[in-house]
Length: 327
Image (cartoon, rainbow, N blue to C red; front, side, top):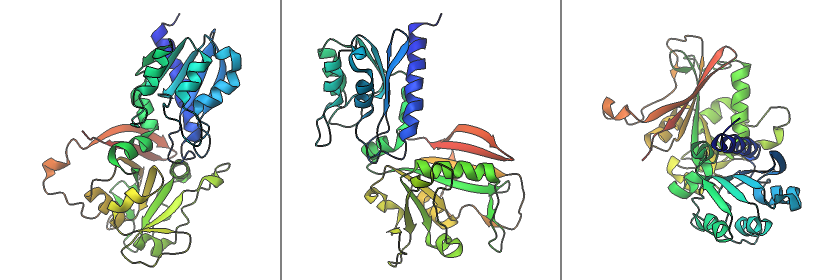
């Protein structure tokens, strides 16, 4: 028989998995998952809807109906405490439904809520448990958190390289370094990002579409951005003059796909929060390197900046995921 803590972790895990369905679809709102459990059975579940409303709690409560009273609600983010023109405060909806208990993965960093939602539930006599699998919840809402703590989108840099760190032959030939499984995973990452960016050189050399070409996800292609000092911008694209302009991007997650100059520029400005490195089992030799100068003054400065978060095999290729370590 599992303990109460183990049960909480499992049900929050279910809510976290549910939340992933909304990643890339909820705009500036976080993709939240909610599961309502009564007597060991799910009576309601919800994920933040496309565009950000209704919130996950509202969807789950509507599904549960009267069964929510006395149940346990598992939610990946603290129920919001502020009323907006787009909908009521979730804390009020939850309090009115009268669950016996609410388990929250993490507090909401939005200053309009930040603890107030939890306080409102407790004032209504509802027991609240917080911090269950909070690190996983934060990782799933990285864009939402970056926007509030850093004032900009969460930035992922994707690099597809040979074993010796090249992204192309010396003559520019680069299709394909990685195999179909790795490319499919990269398209899934596109579907999870609200915006995608390449440099002017990559655009002119490859004319990339930057769309999502996975069955069932073709409608989730991100907004395209071009990093360029030149004012001329192709139709269907938006321009950033420099990496520091990303605060003006309306989406909470930006995927930087290349090339060498754009990747180096974002790293030099310390604007990369996550690295996706796809390594193909090949050696190119005198090819084009993945990165240019990133402004590293001393080798000592390169230590303790990146932490390996995930590693897996994709077909014949290897994916490594690193997260930037920040205070």
